[in-house]
Length: 362
Image (tube, rainbow, N blue to C red; front, top):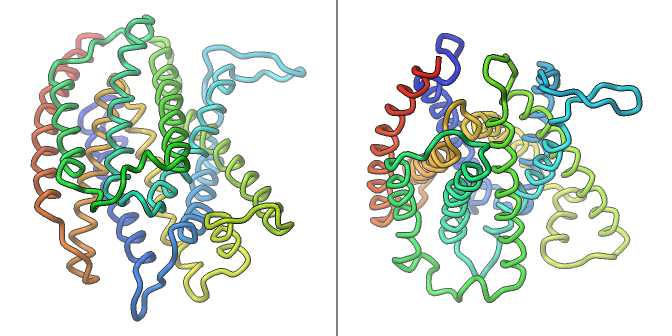
């Protein structure tokens, strides 16, 4: 990766390729471990969430600590109890807490019976794309973002949303009721959206306030602190929930599945699920680095991130159908695929403009 300079199109494509490969592996793992039948684990969403999250978060955090990414260059140090601490930590930590909310709420959105997996995916991915555009508008008005959003990026947003919401417009909820009539769905989805909005704003605030001419580690330092915070938060909350569960203070499907996953692990499969979860831990690196890519707007970075995951999702569905007997992508999936390709075309036009803009700034 070091062959290409930071901010180049070549390095961006490298990140996308890495994200795509490990997202495909993540998608295949989820489909396999949740499937039932001879030689299949047949885990619940919550069980797989527990095992994969446990390994993925520890892996990503351990790598960041081992490589000492937390020792990033700050533009300002704050003295607390005689120690000099980068002031950026005080807003990266909230971003890490938001990440700790995003990870479980993503899986929980797939666990509700009154909302299909497809519609849950559509709502979440569409929301992130819209959030990126809103964050750009806010930071341009605040004077934090000095760049403009090219018209090609706005067109790409439209086609990306067509790719996503085509599934809903064609009856993607399988005749199920409006998901937002359920209070738990509203709470979980609202938590997901609010957390992602805060996180994307903070990511771009951090990226867009780095001074020119001063070499600071933009994405790696942010990743290390955010990942450490989210891992600690997830483990602390899980321990508290398990203690309350053992005391009988909590009941219900989610808390029961959590308790079963920890105290009665799926025999012969739980450690394989943890190994499979490492792919998601690797995805976290590429995801953050794309979201925070140098010289790009939140609109563009969010589109790259979500469109890559959509392509990976379709690919994993196809591979699972070929090798494990799953369902093949539907006509709607292929229509969505075409819309993605069109969106990528307009993004490539925007990328050409952006690289020329960056060259002028050097």
